[in-house]
Image (cartoon, rainbow, N blue to C red):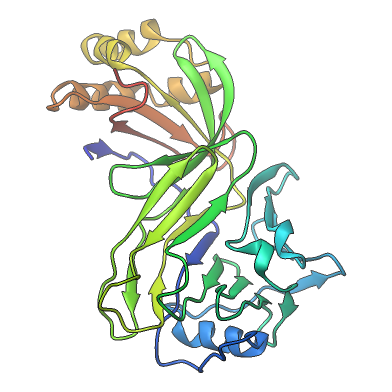
Length: 323
């Protein structure tokens, strides 16, 4: 991707969705897994050591509060899934847990994580909420278990696969003359997978409306079980805003410079950010026009208005409204 970020987006909290499981860890029984064993195995297998945030536990949920504000709520019933809120109390992302309808109720382990026990046919799931990460780890122990792990972000959400294999989860915002501004409620890194011997396992994302599916091609492959896959979910408690411009608008911005930025579109709710980023928009529009095939320009910000601590950046994209 050709891009120029004038300010790097702030990484506040990261959700690590570990879709399978690494070797060198405690063994699993072929029937219901022990929650403590699952938690211990995930802790040993995870690429990064995480300390669980203090949490308030009730009969229905475990709630953790991030130091920068916002909360993560993990339901005791696996069907309840996860819910994130911002520091202002606005609902951010929600997501389901893979295989939730076949998992046992969550049990809080000694390390503060929540484990949903599976069995020989259904992978167990472990969720740990830390200050910089919420790790969701799903354990696959045999070739008879699924290759598809679904994360549904709910009504009104759309999953968009990026050119590098990563994914965004978006909600529509305000309609403008330049299109519809969007809220980015999840930013998910490119997936990877490796087996217990350290060999790479083919993995990728598939998007279908509000559902992100990580596919891990372990069945029939020469892999050593268990296997680990690890996408990461950035900023679960911050909602970003994005507006994209099509080819014609990008061309106008590129040829008109500052005047092209001002004259080619109305950003609506994002107008303050567009004005602030006009120089970057003009520069990146020129980059997009000189690319082959041609790309389009877009602007993203952590707030649609000019507020203290706002982070914004401009880059280019292909596909979608870029036509």
